[in-house]
Length: 247
Image (cartoon, one colour):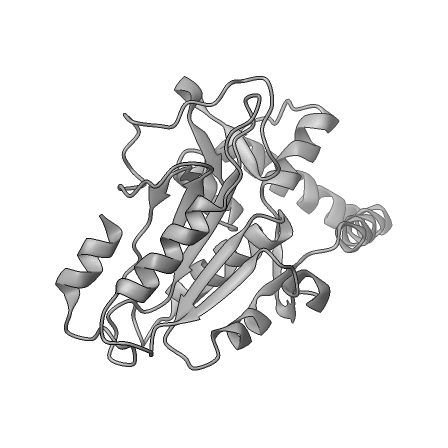
């Protein structure tokens, strides 16, 4: 997975903070958040993971995830990363080891509706008022939450910005079709060809089409490659080519 900055072709570890792309603090594009020292981040699609990573994926970074067939958590990370980019209307390039990689887009989760969240909170409030014990339990849970995570002294606008940066996704509900039909989503199969030249050219073309930074706005795009050099892809047992693509 790669979080690309407009006008840049960058490949480095997501944990490298020294060479963070500088972004003017005046304004940012949708789905891009400013961090310390002018660093810019995009969301992984999982809010808790963004917090663990110190803000999300660094703009211009490459993130490699080891796959495990017995515990396919990598698919959750991949789908969340892609879905978050689609929701933010960021250009997306997906490469996968299947004949029709666009079909994989149908497995991307949909964001949880805010109205549903409001209804759930209203239901919780109604339940606590009807039962004193439930109310005490809710207060205890809230106290424990504040104990471990601290008081959130953020305004309504800050909460809205945080919601726009990272969504909660419903894994049982697919992303709406009209979002997947956007022209800024490209798909390529890694089953075709025995070299990475085609994929590398597609990535370069994709990056060249990203809008360059204009007036301090950091334009972001996302590249998601599934099962690179896996047996089902055309680059099996060619790890050196895969490393060449990353670097």
